[in-house]
Image (cartoon, rainbow, N blue to C red; front, side, top):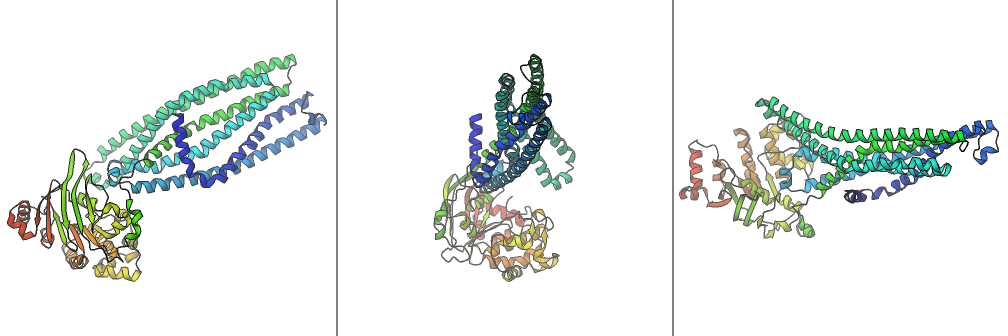
Length: 601
């Protein structure tokens, strides 16, 4: 376990390289701070020795009693001021380095999480992921600021105090050092048990956050179906599991604190008993005994602080373990085309791409026992408009995700203009593809930011595109037009309005291949009619792949692909497929008769 901890801590070294200078200063300050602290009990003992006329330090013996006491008081004041000043400067640098460390780790965690494929995010609840990016990183900051450096400071203090005690009176010094052995053994015994308990705490906290986040996201459904009581009981069970896990760590934490307190009291009692006998026998002065009593208390101060930091240290090591697990998660979608970046100009300025799409023997499954696409092959010619039709679960949306490289197929290849999409840089590939999903996601911010995303166009060009797409009535309804602030996920807009913005932001990107998942599904008839002409202009001279649910949309396509259980079973024009009398003809007949609202039934 200790070897693994060292490996995890060494892994964090690269995040601290930029702060090498500050860390060096922190390390150099440890020794003078410890010496200043160790001098204070010695000076107090010397003051008592001077007042009783006992032997004292040589430079004090040359002074009168009053001068010697004043000198000791002055030296004590200097040591206190030096220690406080250095500790303050040290603490500032520790906190500064800790915050820089967490900022860099959090940036890497965010970037890595964004690069992980949807397959990983499908199985990882958002709340659990957020826990690793927030509380786990915060725990790591604590273990660095209060834990790691604090432990080093305590160890240096122990070493300085131990050397000083042995030099003053080796018999009592050795006796006090022997009392450290059972404490050390006990701490090592607890370490592994506490680690397991603390890991369980972090896991239960992740589940607690996941449940809370899920209920907040689904608050509308919770309230409409009166699920408050049921979900409340479920959340209560999760909270109870978290409480029980925390209670397990409290037991270990309180045990070590009580044990150290007991050992420290026993050590002081032994020093008083043996030291008293030595003072009575005249083999040791009262000043020296006072020094050792103070040292015995100071000796256990670092151990008490270690006990207090025990929770932070173990929690931080657990956080390092959990953060490492996330960073070690392999990237399924590798951007192997970066080396070919220069070969692929941006979609706006490209003239060599025509938009040919080929699926070649593509097979895919989310789970090994449930295939979604099986040996799927088809070609979409440049500029051709193809509609995808099929029952729910036939693989239509999965096909789009594969084309955008949100997932990788287990078998087969996908080509764009004769190039394997795995050899095209992800940034370039997704510039070529313009995707309008049925479920539109809008970010917090204003309308203009949601339309631009990563596109760089002038304000006048943006307004012209909005006008061409018939967004003027929407802009007039919004209080501040393009500057209107949107709530989370565009909550202050209707579904139809959100979809209008989704179409507009794709038009701004000027893609070569347009992919649409029923872009007008949530629009009212008047808005849809207004947008349809503009959509026709958007589709002009572009390859289009449309998931279609409405018969009117399907009939306008150049070709229709009919999927069932991940296989291509029919293809052709609307009239050709109707004449064949297959699945498409049945779906179309049902929709015309009003028995089905779309072509997925």
